[in-house]
Amino acid sequence: MKIRVLHCIETIASGGVEQTRLTLIRGLDKQRFEHKIICTWAGGPVAEALKNEGVELIVVGPFKHPFEIQKHRKVFQVIRSFSPHIIHGAIFEGMAMAAIGGVCGRVPVVILEETSEPVTRSMTAIWIQRLFVSLSDKIIGISPAVVKYLTEKAKLPLNKILLVNNGVQMPNNIETATVEKIRVDLGIADGDFVIGSVGRIYNDVKRFSDVLEAIKILDRKDLKFLLVGDGPDLLELRNKAIALGLERNFISVGYQENPSLFYRIMDIFCLPSAHEGFGLVAAEAMLHRLPVIASNVGGLADVVVDGITGFIIPPYSPEAISTKILMLEGDAKMRTEMGDRGWARAKKNYTSERYCKEIENLYLKLVSKKTLTRC
Image 1 (cartoon, helix red, strand yellow):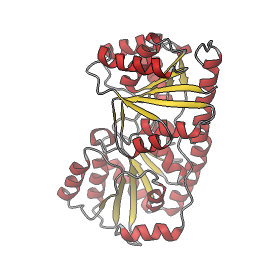
Image 2: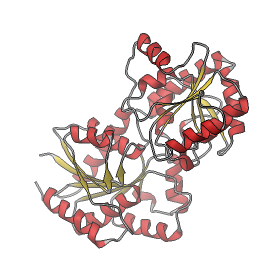
Image 3: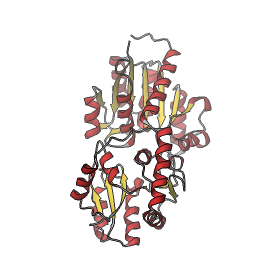
Image 4: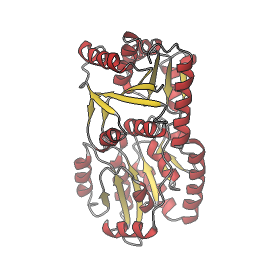
């Protein structure tokens, strides 16, 4: 008998939450688990990749508020037809669908997942989350920082909280000739120093503009900012580069389902986020042996060890970024040593294999405690 899992998330675009769901579905045994996903919107390469894995995506539309009856009716209809053994919800809308749908639909196992460190969440929203958690079996925190939020600020029951660090896939092997060809195609010269970043382009969150500001401070033509990702603020970022006179320093390649090739082009990695639940791409960069400059927010300070695998800097600080860029650019030995230590740390703690195994163990443990009346 397959264990049926109904995943509830918000949008499926190219963000870390949906990427992690794709990693999980690919990593779990298809002979043992069957998946469906309910979301508010779906589009783009990640949605297509999920469909290619045989996963049905059911779009219910955006929520006006967490208790919108019309949306929960749609969720309930899916539960009745699919009869899941597990309902697993991430992001606030996903937690609402999983908690309410799980109880109303009598799903044996209800799992919630906090994927951010919500620094601006209101007390009303915290009270609502407490309600959802009271209806669930477990709530996963994706980093120690998120677990700290759940325990200290949200004040959720300790017996409900479980830390499961996110995980990323080990890099593919790529021939050096392929890397060199792409460097040439992108206009990157042999002597250029490449600062890279990856992510969904919401600049208020990711602060990619701070990297541009840092390069402006250094005022060097041989510094290139290679950005992998797409999003609503890409045009704004390009205009920022032009306004700063950095159009030749900024290279944007859009979303890449397999970004390994572009990590190989980078000399260092920078993620200066304003807030970050985990920082999946920081761990991914470490698996590519890159030293990481990351802001001291959320899960990033857990992933990156300051002075060991990279540098932790204050958020909103192009000056601090520029200082660390200069340090790393001028010391190849430091870059290599930090990259090697980062690779060892990420391989031990942040691989997709470890992540999938921990989630599988949780699924099996909770299902075994319930009487499975639906077969």
